[in-house]
Image (tube, rainbow, N blue to C red; front, side, top):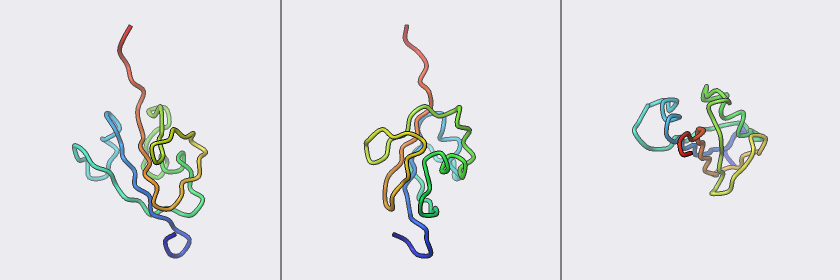
Length: 86
């Protein structure tokens, strides 16, 4: 755990959500320092990502719901809805 009640988490944004990356790179994740007890939904709020633009979140390769409390050092992958197919 980080200092002063904060943890450090890695957030990876995929497809159309990359536009919310603060440095707007083509690829890459960002490390965030967030308060202990922060959920996936709260990370979306911190990053100004509208919830309706997200579909799935994976934490350390496991699908999780928005109320999942992120732990120090975890990698959070956020995916938008996927369109296409028949």
